[in-house]
Amino acid sequence: MSWSSRVYINIIMKIDLQIHSTCSDGYYSPSKLALLLHRYGIEVVSLTDHNTIAGQAEFKKACLRYGIKAIPGIELYVSYKQKTFNLLWYNYNSEAPEFLKMLEATYIRRRRFVKKITLRLRHLGLHFNLGKFIKEYPDYLPTNHLADAILAILANKNKIKKALNLNVMRAGDVIRYCFLS
Image (cartoon, rainbow, N blue to C red; front, top):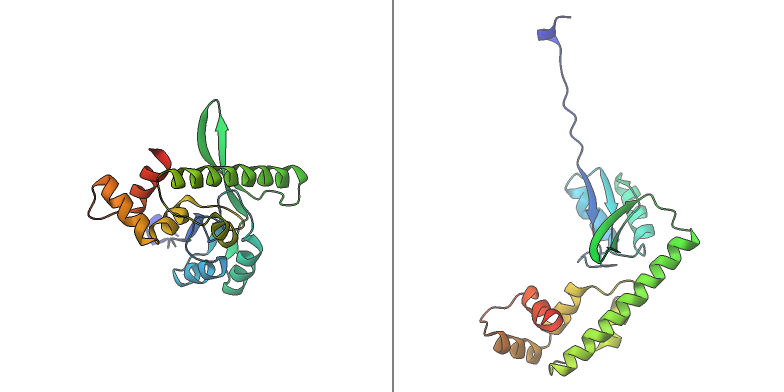
């Protein structure tokens, strides 16, 4: 067979190695994500929720149902030499005691952070139910959903809009006002 008569087949595989579910800061459950990924033709995927593996079993089961290869993953917040960054970790040993201790310590730090933010919200005159939020997000306390919960209260929304002199407000504005200022 000459060079010009060879047939080449391009194989394209749709892969997504970083997605988040409602177990961290995503907006879809692990099962719903698997369904959506199936509809988009994704063949290989990794659920990389922030600092939690709570959705992995549900996600793996749903992916099996749709013929999607699921790779266990997690996105960790890491500090090194006074720098903070996110690290993706795949195929970890979810039963290793050190791994589980690390996740627990991370969750405890995140709860302290949200309690600190709640105190800040009170200082700013904003209303927020921390107990309800922790109950709704037992595995991870997502900042974006926290901003959504703050904005869901009209008095909070109006107060922040007035303080920032905004007509239209985004979650980023809430985060900047409540968490960073």
